[in-house]
Length: 116
Image (cartoon, rainbow, N blue to C red):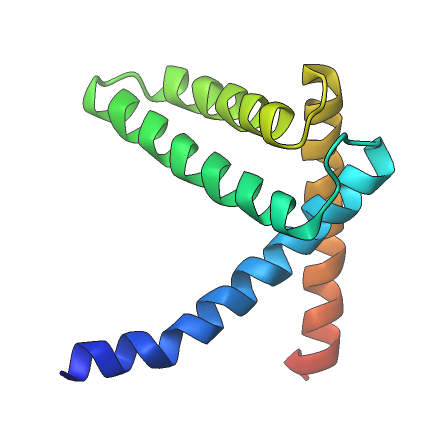
């Protein structure tokens, strides 16, 4: 019973974290000119890309191919972003770089507002 209560309390915080993480991807998709620029689509792309990248890295670590895992993780994220957000692969690569830069800016803003 206690674990259900803990999950019920932590679920809104997980959703808030996903929303805050998806905002830079959404903004970058608008800048790059993605075919699908909705916030929910950016959040879906982020969840799918993260899940697929973790799975690829886990398989590569199990096979003792960590460097291949890092390379395949990057390719996986670009491919998922390209397919979900309706972009070319070059556009998805640019989106990844731009969203990382925007994530740093959002993180610095949140630390400035709430970090003290």
